[in-house]
Length: 83
Image (cartoon, rainbow, N blue to C red; front, side, top):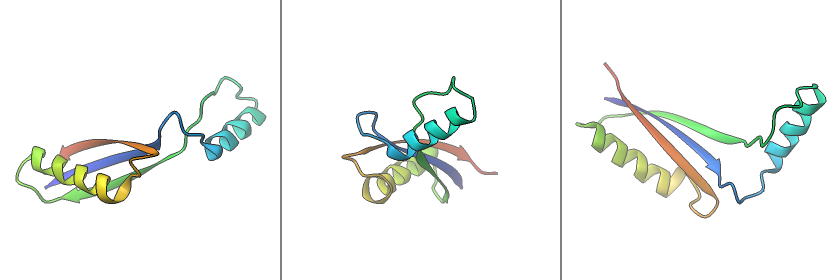
C-alpha cells in the first residue's frame, strides 16, 4: 500500500485571480514581504500497488485523466510506502 500526495497548480503563465486576491489580503495585514501567491489543490489517496513505480504510474494516470487540466495546470506527485 502506498500513499500519494498530489499537488495541482496553475501554470505560471496562467493568471491566478484567487492567488492575487489572497496576496492583496496578505498585504492588507501588513505582511507586505509576501509576493507571487498562487492557489492550487492537494489530493491525497492510498494506492494498492505492488511497487512504488506502479503506484506512481497509477497516480500519473489519474492526474492526466481526471485531476489536472493539462492545458492550464501542472502537477507533482509524492509517493510514500504505508506500513
